Each structure stands twice: as C-alpha cells, then as structure tokens.
Length: 60
Image (tube, rainbow, N blue to C red; front, side, top):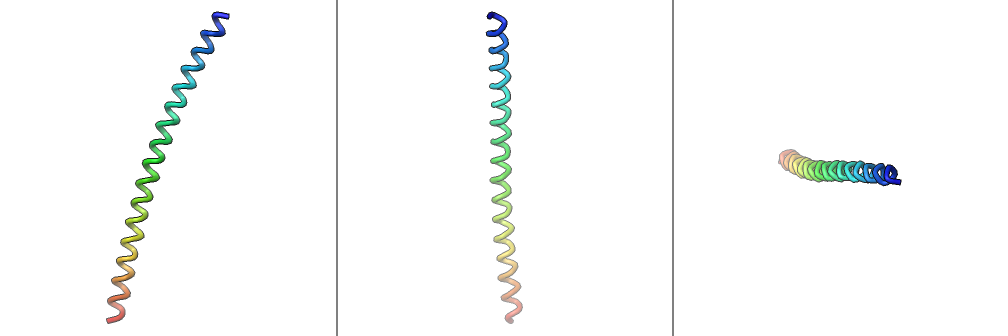
C-alpha cells in the first residue's frame, strides 16, 4: 500500500508539471496569436492606405 501511495504521489507531481507546461505553452500561443492579429490589422490598414492613395493619384 505504501508503494502505491508513493507511485500515486509521483504521478500526481508529473501530471501537475505537465499541466503547468501545457498552460505556459497555451499562454505563449495566445500571445503569438494576439501579435499576429495586430500585425494583420496593421497590414490591412496599410493596404487600405496604399489603395486609397493609388485611387487618388489615378483620379488626378
């Protein structure tokens, strides 16, 4: 019985460590996703500016 409890405790520690690692990976992915969204939005806005400028110069 003592061995079972020891093994169970070790497994609990391993699971907790893995969960912590997964949590950090998810945080990292969320941060990268936010940065990608911001960069994408900036590229869209820059493209709109270029398109607007191109249309303005074409109308002159």
